[in-house]
Image 1: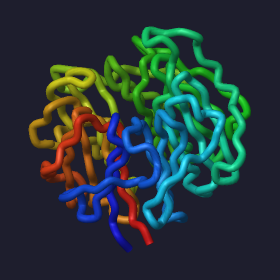
Image 2 (image 1 turned 90 degrees about the vertical axis):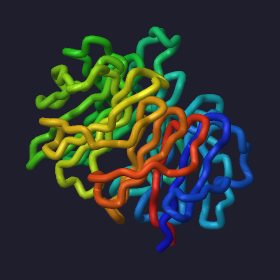
Image 3 (image 1 turned 180 degrees about the horizontal axis):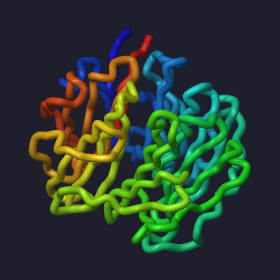
Image 4 (image 1 turned 120 degrees about the horizontal axis):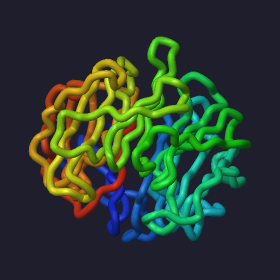
Length: 318
């Protein structure tokens, strides 16, 4: 199996690395090279396929590195969120800007729009879906975060939805993590004004202050082995000029500095994969990249820098 790392950029498409991020080459060959990439996804059961959500619709790369545009109702939208069911790689859910959510049950051939009720206008114009998560406890439960329109949840596979906003100081939600803490569901939300936690299925949210000069939070990701470790990106704004990567070892109850080397902007997201939970990547909004090979205990800055990165992933390709 080959380890491959991908970085989705704003204006320079997708880049890939076959040597753990030491050197990079153009990926997703055959599609518009200067598109903006907002989201990416891959699945253990389809190791040769990588998906990307762009400003040109859905992109799909096959084993030979060639990519194609997959037609969908979101062709004229920016696809900010892309998720595959952990149990079935053919079940795809995408979230867009302007805000909408679509589902495919056959690997992208057919799509239907899901009835998520978003506000018509917000401070950024129209809201956008920033993250979609499949629930770790109930197969039919799906979570979506919106900027700027709180958290939305479906318990029936997307047929109906409810808005969960009680307790947010400002419902600008950048990311969510839904974890199974010994049979109890715990919900974490990264927002423009800090970290929030819910222990009652999202019915109420409570601010959890970080020991940081800034409370702006962005990407959040549990480590792939689900040992209780969660990473949280924090900085002085978008894009910001500095920031901290935080680590929790107890599903978000307490947080400690993960000691990322100095950054040029806010850390943006962490990439992890259950094929090797010790191998992690982190990027900043303004293009720096970091690697850990010991589960996040120590980090090394990689030599290549891109102008702006919005998403990363790594996987093992056949």
